[in-house]
Length: 325
Image (cartoon, rainbow, N blue to C red; front, side, top):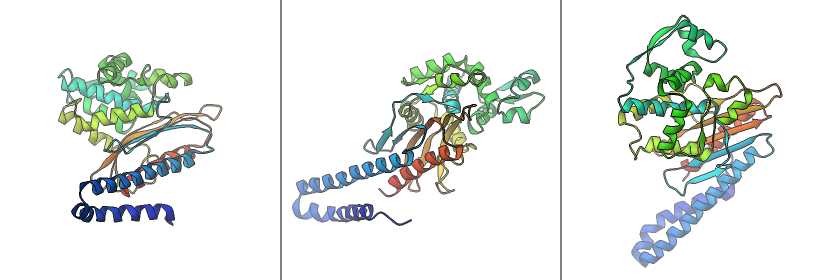
């Protein structure tokens, strides 16, 4: 790819300024150093604006509502578009559900090793919904809570999702948990079975891109001890093993890139409208830095390929921004 000449010049300028800092400090003192750092920060601000322009070009003329929020390790490395817009989550909320379940594990009300019974009648009730658990155990089974969690998050299992809802007390219990940890801009009303029974219901299970990022930040930083270290590491490992969304956030990143993420997809209705194609996650760079990224595509008349490509391109542009800093 041919590098934009303007971007290349700014990058070279940034490198030269960084090399000059020790010399300026020695020769002209503190105030000159502050002036130099101000110039450097100005260049960084411009690069955020460039990133914003590039992302706007990705979504321009697309027949879809696109919202995203990006947040780096420093507050200045933040960007959003339609970040406060309420859009349907679809299976993204299985990540939030896992947090609530693990909170109960930490309170010793549940245990990852405890066994859950699933009878054949319950298995058969989900024959019209996506469920790797149903395929693995067609006649019913007794399985661990950890296996249900792994399938629900990494494989987006709908049967597993609704079992977890039952275990914690339903969507109201999850909503109460989110309120307790300080999340306001998320609404969870329906289970998977309920949500998929009527197209309109998915819009009642909504989030904003900014709120999605906030939950990711609270979880990964864990400064408020939202989860125990054991529960945090368990869920992080599961998110890193997510099997869905290979063409979304991970779509244009190298195969070696580590992404801890959760996807959500509604499919199309009879009018050819896609209610939601979402991906939220934590993207890790080779230098061990990372950034949070939540991308929500809704009410789209575009193809599934185009919807996923938009997410992939936004993720790659965000990756390039942090990689070239």
